[in-house]
Length: 479
Image (tube, rainbow, N blue to C red; front, side, top):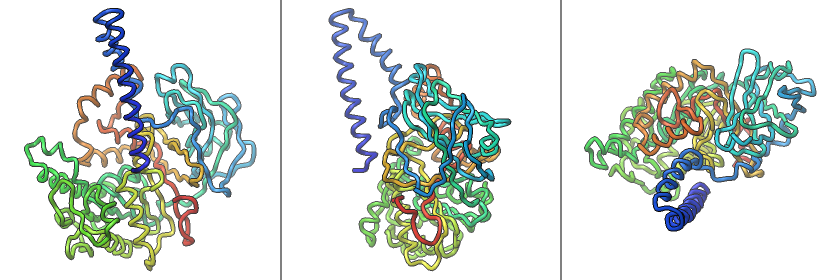
């Protein structure tokens, strides 16, 4: 059982206990006070739950994030003078660096009911980075894009529904501009490349998008059209295969630089466990990947028999890497992103690279899902992305933040809007919850679309983690 599954199991157990206690309180209030009181309390309790307690947050907001950066990371002495952030030593910045500020954030009384956030204020620039309600611990602000204001001493940090406490610490991570290199993005499913790296690949000197699965399962939206389960899954897979090849064109990626490998959703781990054994789709009644690969612009090794095997996946990846010869590869970070297909996608790329004549100089990791906070990045569309919760100090991390201006954010939002999987309406319960949270908790919906990923992914930054920086191998401590 994965850590995410363990956390969900514990969360559901605690929720059942809370419901049982609440039910006993309601019964007691009806017996001892008034027959109608349980009905009123039940409605008020449900509204309160939807407004303030429905987030999947599997840790205490009072826990410190426990980040470990490499020992040779550049740390800079800074202090807060009121709201102004002051650098205590000479600092030479070009503006392309990733700047991370560690500081304790403590929520006020209102910050237990409204999402607390920190505003970054500078001449002509404003950012907002949001944290957990009731936060009272060490957090990591992303100051990338504010280099000139930081150096000039004009950058101000202003807490809303929270305050900044203690001594801050600033880390500077210097890296080349990866947009000037050949970039290959590995997407376990259609839309993963756009969610994580549309800004990067749309600006890259040369970009390739490789999608591993058709993402055919959970096709209830198509079943509602009158299709049988397998037929609906095939239709969904064909649509998402099309999306994976067509949407990158919006960013200027040529057709010849996109590939859909057509393996089956949530089956990569079974394929990895038995590399020679074909693993069919869970829902589409298929054991041949070629239905979802037929729009590829060239043949790949797996087209010979269409068998959904791990060995075919490795052969496809090797052929594509040798064709593209990417300098930068972008793939899920297996220690931060817990989705099983994302973990296996990372493992498949590393295995495919073993002994291959071409090796990328840089590997960047991304996280479209988290173990313990389903709402991250917190806050609204257009906000910056603070570092996510991490509680494993043995994990050595090196963040890399890419800025996106408003025009680039809008292009990214439109790319996501073209993805069929992000178009269906949310369930009624989720829509009611969002309305309650807007009215009582001050949360905003995204102007770009109803799906939660429009809020999460259309931001001032795209955040990556450097897993490999040269030919010497993986960044130590990462995996």
